[in-house]
Amino acid sequence: MNNPIGIFDSGVGGLTVLDYMREQFPHENMIYIGDNAHCPYGDKTKEQLLSYTRKICEYFIAQKVKMIVLACNTTSANVLDELQKLYPQTPIVGVIHSTIHEFLARHHQNVLVIATTATIQSHKYRDLILEYDSQVQVHELATPKLVPIIESGAYKQGVQSLLSEYLSPYRQKIDALILGCTHYPILLEQIQEVIPDIDYISSSASICQEVASYLKNHQLQNQSLDAGSIHIYTTGNVDSFVQSSIGFFEYQHLKAKHLDLKKGSL
Ligand code: DGL
Image 1 (tube, rainbow, N blue to C red):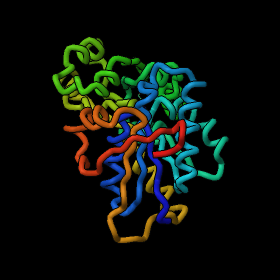
Image 2 (cartoon, rainbow, N blue to C red; image 1 turned 180 degrees about the vertical axis):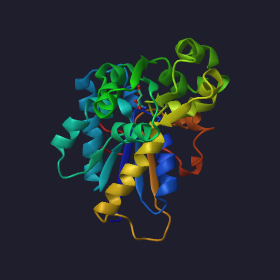
Image 3 (spheres, rainbow, N blue to C red; image 1 turned 60 degrees about the vertical axis):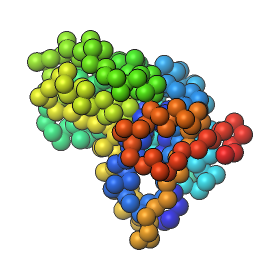
């Protein structure tokens, strides 16, 4: 029960998931990995994504995690099934199913999904939404320039013109927007300026409900009343990881460290 939960993404985006998880599960121990050595994931092939994520899962399993959360839509869309088959002893969850449940619960009829190229090309969001409700109009848009801008920290100077290029064709045409990449909630306020007065569904928030049910149903909740420990690692450069996350991630005192997954050592 007091084993940690492993959470990963390609970089700082999954910290938006860690933020919600920390708030909802204050007593859980957690290990976060941002795989910045391979960021962005959105332009990678399925084979590359599988190779990167296998290393991360094997590292987590060696740390005896009780579950693994793919805080990343790109890997949830492309390699979740494969990882679940490779590591059947470890529960592994992705962010897409819970985001779709959240979307369906809000009863919208016209939605735009923005995500990385690899997520959009999988058509996971479109296919799953239509499987549940064939009446919904699902628009899909790859927005590949956003993750590099967020990872570089340049998003802090404002990216409204790029967002406007991507999103203004959908003004007046949609009633909901799915932020189908865990990096995108970092831009939420800027997105709201460009395309206001619709409902925004964040894949980063939705996953917590699924994790909560899993822990409860399997009686895996940490019973300790102490604050859980959080260890944050990046496979890339620690300084730029920290710089990009300042402003949206409040746990800076946790001090990210470098992790070399090739050697499997810290
Ligand atoms: N944040 C990830 C996602 O949700 C990965 C983005 C990327 O590295 O391209 O898709």
